[in-house]
Image (cartoon, rainbow, N blue to C red):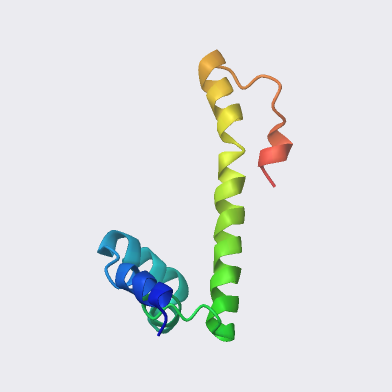
Length: 90
């Protein structure tokens, strides 16, 4: 095992539970162990799963973030005048 791999696994094996638990919920125990705990980032099946889940989560979170300025403007003006109801109700 290389020195870099040893250094990285010493960190990944001590990740706090508040980070570990959401990661396990996202990619599963087996893939978490392979990708994070053992730091085998070239494991194709788990890497594909992690990338897919990560991109999906990024899209959902990003979609929420882009609405924040509009929400703040509505709160600041205390009016939703000019918004199309049809754009939000389908």
